[in-house]
Length: 429
Image (cartoon, rainbow, N blue to C red; front, side, top):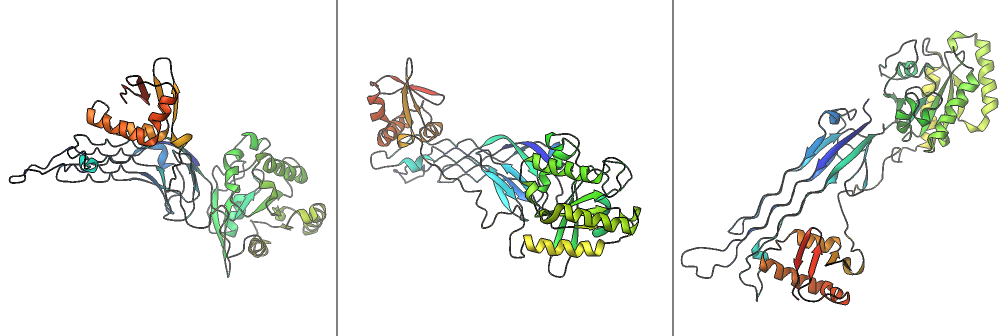
């Protein structure tokens, strides 16, 4: 299973506003009629239940949305750019270009990871009583663009954990309709598998987590790659071989517990049902004594101790019922599944707050004055500073915002050079 993917997402830029004047016979005062540019398309993740992993995203790593259309004369606005939709499996987590954490768990759930640029206003928008024929318009802004990482965490109620060859895949196949690969050598399972137990009132999804070994939490073996899947589980079923080929049952159990704790996501605090596996290899009296000994040793720290055999199916029906009973205690039917956020999904909304006094700052450099702040920089990004009318409009906006007053407090005089982002110009106010 492909659990991670790194992709480049690039939202569409906004279309430019149009500079246009109405030209018709018998209409001597047509006036400006430049339309607005369209907004750029977004890059959107969509939760698709038909997807099982992120492997499809590894081959095509660049995802770009379409640019918004440019405005035209006769007040015709440019069309909005088409979104680029990326289907991902349930359980996908990501961080948007602007730093919002996402967790997609509901089929059809949508989340914007890169927002399209805004379309520029046409010259019609800048008409006032004193500016009746503006010969400038806004440019569209760029869309968000950056590398983002996606990570998949399975949506399972119960995690099957244990050392390699403890019998997790065999148990998953025996309890559910899953058909995992089963063999008599360690690390047969190379990716997590899912299966479902059906009860009268509920279902339980089981995840077979590939075998953990000593040092898994630090990256050894396969365990570290798949421990993240356990984070969503409501409880653990911990398989321990009664007669392992290597090691001894208690030491093997403690080894896995130590790795769960070392991982650092609270996995060691999950309710745990201990299952002594492969009971068919020992005499019934020995198995019964082992269950009693483990139950006494672990006491109330676990939900219980049971023994099963996937080969002979001994104890499976009792285990199936016990899993459903214990899961109902830790995850009521009216509770949201583990890892699922409640309420409406609101990741597509962004809130802009000004930074510093008035959302801008002013500082003196060696040979010029620099104005910073996202609002001011965006204002200059959208206008052509080589256009005298546009520059005059920008000066007016800076005065209204209080930037000119702040410049003068810093020692600015008319004719000094001013820098905003990549723009540099003389300011005569």
